[in-house]
Image (cartoon, rainbow, N blue to C red):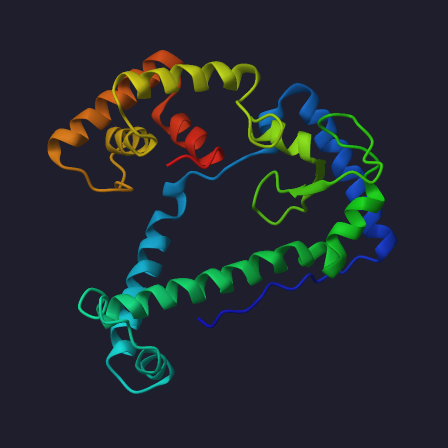
Length: 257
């Protein structure tokens, strides 16, 4: 199946876009008052695990093939030789794979940006500014202040226009990078203490949760290290009263490990 972009069968006029966003922001304003977490829904990693595994395999196969036959990639490798100190350390198929990952990243960036244009066209930020007079999280007027586009869920719905402070609150931070707040602050405190006492890393919590759930591990571990990861995850679940899946989502939402 060849790739094709989705096209909106019922395009909106500029005024309809602003009206739609106004209603959309109002909906999330009400949600934010009762549950700020509703503004930051994340799909569990395992939902697309099989597809991502297939993509990874495809990249490996394509990179190995492209590195060994004449073509643009082989020409690029030959015209950009490695320095002497690296020539024996970076094999061509690995270099080709790195280039494939970079190409995929650029493609993903372009396609993800297009998803915002599905409903709003190329002026998504302009329409958001027309529809939003104040931040739905903080309640403060924008008044020319810096703002952020935030996606409450990456399923095609439009972004929300938030102030920098509001954006930080949604992600459990203060001042764009400070400590978590509210209930999240207590969860963060508990996990940091467990992490510190055991001299552990966030990746160990992730791997421990994945192991308990029978999921593919984000990072393979030696048996003794894996056992430590599982202990970390078990203690974290008991201390926070969160399930292993909830802990994984918590890590994902904060970009940890």
